[in-house]
Length: 233
Image (cartoon, rainbow, N blue to C red):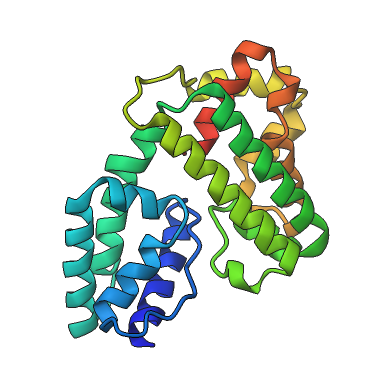
């Protein structure tokens, strides 16, 4: 159980990095604590395939988990989290930036479904998602968990689509602002985005839904680049 708890804590920290990973819950009977924690990460949508694609990361994670179990970090990111941060920067984000328009648009659509559900069912979790991720997706209701996993799976599909590809068009922040205006954002909307951390659960969720719902409101040639910007952030 110790290894499994470490794996879950790693996944919770992943959420803070924007990976929004979802911990596996299988018990790995004959594995030692280090291998249990690593196996849970390898069963996580999006991060699992990234680890499989880069065996060197697997070995670095294994060693980081082993050291963390032996001598837990008392401040700052844990050793596994440092490796996961490298995995995100070096492997996942570059692949998402190469994903085709259709896959990133689908990933954004999955976000819309999740946020729309959380807006009614769990506003605090909706705000948490809008701030970077959900720390305990296992505590969502059944439909929330289903939609959360679907979002991860669609993001994983975008990751797979971008592996080995060439860099696609991704707008700058200034261009994103122009696209949001085209999608109907007004000055009060931008004011809310500028002060996002101060917003209530309901308002932050409303703004998250409004941003994620923007692609269909944009010209066809802007929908993919807009989605890619947010999926890879």
